[in-house]
Image 1 (cartoon, rainbow, N blue to C red):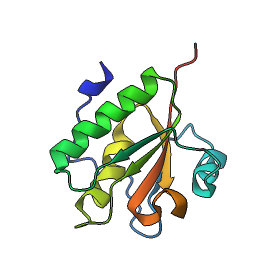
Image 2: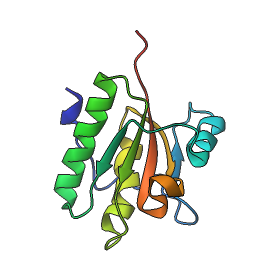
Image 3: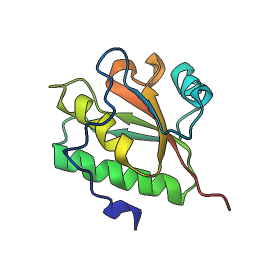
Image 4: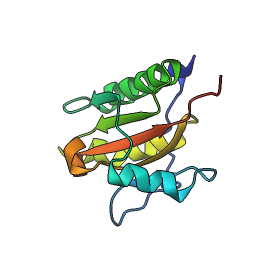
Length: 126
């Protein structure tokens, strides 16, 4: 199942160090990313990763993505916190390599701002 997805530590392909965390798969329009940035899409699931180890956070992230896909939830909020910056750095890398993630952007303030990401998921067509 989807929760068996293994995140690689070597994946550093796309990180944009300057400015807010953001990513869009090559087949996703910039418009979708703008919607995330503006908070147009309302997240239906929130994952609070504050205080988790990297392994816990990875496992929870995989489980959340699998849950969203199964339940046709296309927008989620991942709250990695600021903390020691480790999850803040790693979370975008993990998300960007997952096949069900279309895009993400640093969350608007009401969803955690700098300490969170709004994530757009690919929901299979019925």
